[in-house]
Length: 635
Image 1: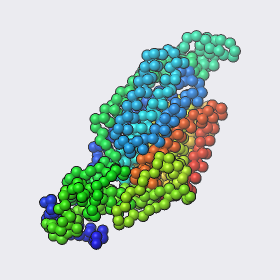
Image 2 (image 1 turned 45 degrees about the horizontal axis):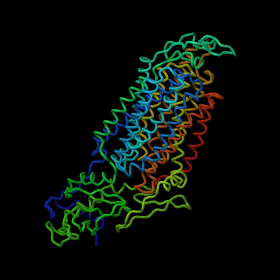
Image 3 (image 1 turned 45 degrees about the vertical axis):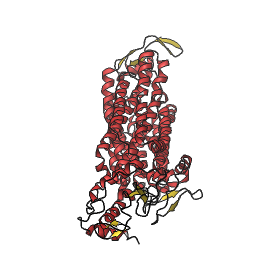
């Protein structure tokens, strides 16, 4: 019979490296290979560059639409200024839902390239219709201006999700937290950097002035500026910082649809070039086997090409040692719950014959090659790579319990289970599996907070609290930078301590940050510690300090859970084949949270921004408690 794994590994460690097999290749003693991310470092650089482009274009579009809504297109309330979040969120969420299955079917690179190409459309449309066709007709130009975020959402949903899947492929299944954290860290770091780039661009290219004509005030027509605008602005309208909400449609700034979108178009072109010219396919069915054989070539395993395996494809008949009866290279199942490894790669029937060179054999294999193949089968980067609510198990949804049934792996080679359909995975991820439902809820809340930061908080800090554009950009950069920087740490941390604690702490910490913003910067400084009603400059300085601290805290706590969401979804996927689709469904619910920025802005218009922040903070507190009591770590 077949020797035990322990006996095989002992033999591997003691066997002389001088033995030779039938192919004449020396069989070296086992040496643990470098981790996948080390072996694939060059491709990680490429995919990180693509992610950087995604983050940069997002920030340029977001801030230009947010500021241009009031200053160039005359939107007065927070709802109009944050309306870009709705088309962005809906398009990004739907694309996230679809891209996982498409990336599995058609490969990661084609889907990423398509998303990068879509990224060219939004800025091109704005430059054409807002900058050329309707440069002075805000009514006709507005739909194209705000509608550009729909193309941004499509591009972001396809490209960023694809880059995360590629990064997970490249880093290996044991480092999903690291992979997700790396992708999010790079993206949000460049979001932070381009907050400052946008600020410099705005100060150097945007021109403001009074719009000639009259405006209705108290039932009569008055010359612009109106009395309310004159009092609020001091009759000054020269730079974007001179704009106040009372002067919407009167103090008009031009250029938000030109320079930021021209730079966005150039960056999107760089993304397309990088993807088309330098990115390689990383789909596990095509990538893992070749990568594993390459990594193990120093062990003495014959360096022959390995045919790619597809779960639904027919394979040549294989004998117990993995030799195809047709003489071609074959893959066999070893004790990994239906996963496939390149357990043997030979030609002809020489390895099935009883003769060999180099000593004792197992079914015709020389001892040296048998030891090397045992080491290859034991490579932890493949054996530990199964998804599901267990280690290497294939989990299928149980309609009664909603938790899934584990099918333990055996020593015999069983055919892989049929992958679940799209709707089965959607049902299981949304409410059928308690753990995935909790992850989807946490993701929705995470981007609920992000939508607040991008929309209401960003607009309130400049147009409500009266801080300068430079201060607002510093607040946005602080939020994005800490959100990005904390994600690499939190992703690696979650690989060690689990997913439950980082996500729970992230939700509760985010609630605290929103409370701090409301009471520390709002309510006209009544709750500012150390404030002086007679010293407005001192109070304003303390208010901005509190707002900046709240932004840094919100970024840190959101970053603490952001990459862990994807890793948790992958942990509880039914099997490796459904990881991409499960990740897409959780990202669908996560990115729908962006859209909540608009109804919360409506609440702010009817009540106050402070009341809206406190309301969202309460919701995050409840969500943190629900997640802590619902989620369980994968075995």
